Image (cartoon, rainbow, N blue to C red; front, top):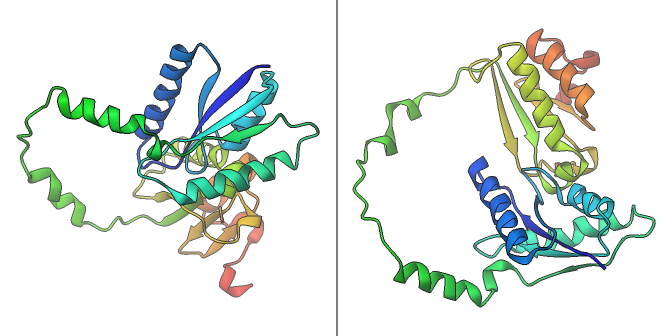
Length: 237
Ligand code: FES
């Protein structure tokens, strides 16, 4: 029976953080000679749901989830269980899925830190200028501010494809941050409506956004200023 290992991480603020988790999975795959891949509870792709689907497609007889986050993150530990339960309820014959203790409490972490302390060190000699650049005092003058929820439920429902599509369409229309500022957010609360996109200052909430609706939001609302299907601000409905 093939066991697939999934390193489950949380949103990290920079794609380099996502790449680090993916690299860690690749190194583990080489070290163990077994299927290991990375996935994300929120904020990045693939989602835990998608990674479980892939493991099943690849013939996993069982799946082991490893909460991969430092420092300890109770949110991740709780939501791995919820996301798995939601995924399993939709499968005909899901493989057994178990979960390890979080990375942050693994005894080997002490060994790794001790090795880092005993290893080579680089002296720090940077200038403080970039810490407070004048550029960080300017409030952006964008026309629209778009919030794309990347919370755990919206991530499971497909927020990554929504973000990708929006970003691509805005690039096609040559709309940059000065025109449309797109911000990925944590949970915005009405999770059952996810994937969720909110356009301000119009206060227009788009529920159940897929690639098609994301394209229309970019083309109609953000480019032409016409909310899709004549939607009105939430406050006036
Ligand atoms: S996860 Fe998107 S609204 Fe809660």
